Image 1 (tube, one colour):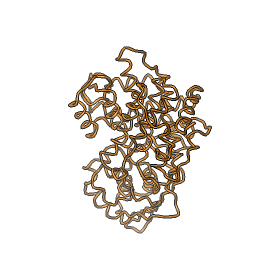
Image 2: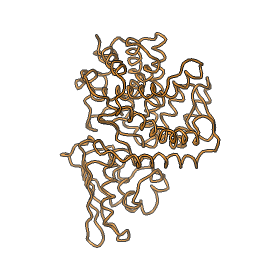
Image 3: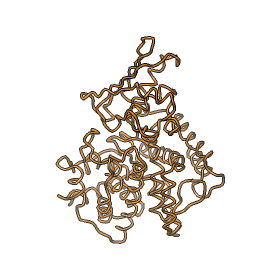
Length: 447
């Protein structure tokens, strides 16, 4: 049996066994988080541009685009692409271990496919099936990330959701379509040829497109496989397959089939409380701790951040507010100046405000090669020197919500309501489809 076929059989075996109570509870929370974050993200420029382009192309009105101030339905794959970008664009979706953005690459595809099937008049998946398919999509991505052997940021050759997201989306959509093992293997094989995502585009609009494209590509792959479209028999494990292309000699195919609990529950997601790259959450937490000893008026003369060597978040002067999401220096400065970090922290207005410009010139990062950059082993220290000679210290070896330190449900509910509240202000009332009011009602109904 090929590696790809064995992988498909493993996922179908887990599907047949069903979700554990912990896995089901995690899936419900992920649905809540994804909808809330995507609703707010839908108002950002990138999803709006993607919607406009898709609308120009036309096609069947199969699936709803998250609220953008007007009712919009697009072909299912196009809706998955837009909604995937919306769910990721704020960098507010959960983090996973190994590092990945597994929600925006899968949930939008599952929702779009479910709506497509319902509008076609056939049997539509119920909520339980959607949650199960979501767990499978995340499981597939987690196993691929484990098989890649790339856990340290410096080892990553491609942006993880672009590398594994399409295959995970195909697996989840295949579960909704009830594909048998041979067809599910073909779907994942088709999706494997859609993998990619340059790390060089992190910090730009294109980063969210990695997730949207993965969601759409996986949906299309599952539909194609259901119609008899084929890929190589071992597109994932073959000598010129996905593993060899993306991981080379480090590929560990046994990780795709090893017995394990649902990844959605163990270790599960690390829910984000700040809309920025996850490594910056460490410095934000450390900076907020140091700030507790500051009166807010004594001048800051220097800020030193000691962190693992992570070149992609060592950005002393980010060019835009968006790029600030990927800057240890900027997020530390925002936490020190404002005491909190939210969506508005990453506007161009905040990035180029006089107090921010002045403080950024005083922030330095000291890379420590002895520290690991993988999030489950990471540690960041900050030292803030004041004009009166005092030095305020903060450290973080795991921000709130990291694996093993779950945040209280009340904190998550506050996040979701904040996302929807801001979205409600930005959207017109009475929007059809996934409008602000309807998403809010859905979240209320879920708890």
